[in-house]
Image 1 (cartoon, rainbow, N blue to C red):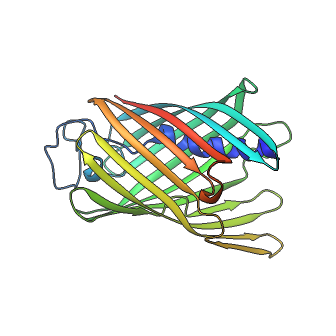
Image 2: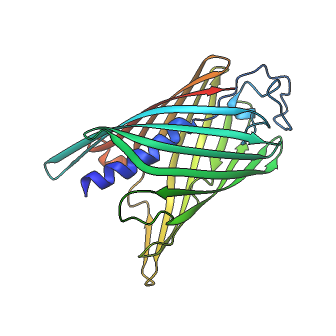
Length: 267
């Protein structure tokens, strides 16, 4: 059970690490924060960038993550790598693919492939909303290849030029495998554009509601407070480096944590 918990947590953090915060890479010729954008005028500040890549832009990512879990005197840890690719189609659509590779204790492919598509539904000076649908195809022996979909409504509200409120990620997860389940999570966060090359984000979960196929309902309201912290730095125009620290429960931060390091390169 410990191995399964670590594995699922690593996949989640690797997805964040290689997707990154989308720190932009060009001179901010359009500082209104409103698109459409091109490769040439993609905003330099993450707080002003669109929530989808401009048409024709390819972004590839590589991430490493280490997870450590200690429960009732039993300890376990694991290290994995993740790769991703995202591509902008037109001015509002983005498609993506990602997968993972176990490094330690077992060197093996994660046997899953993530696929996603998202649409920039709202693109305003203060408010941006990106609707997305994704799925994870599972190629492990005996597993259902398709087991459900995830629905996002990533939202960013710009308070000022340095601070934005975020939410809507991981909004709805629908599992069709036996037992079927629907999970609804309310995630919120804060984005700080500290300086032009440095951005910091903090995200947590306010409410988690799960309903299984047999009608059982589980609600978590502040029972375990998860926190994910990201620090992104842009050493050169096309390259971002993102450090991620995730704590599934702040109360047990010393017993269960995941550290991720990701790099993004845009073409």
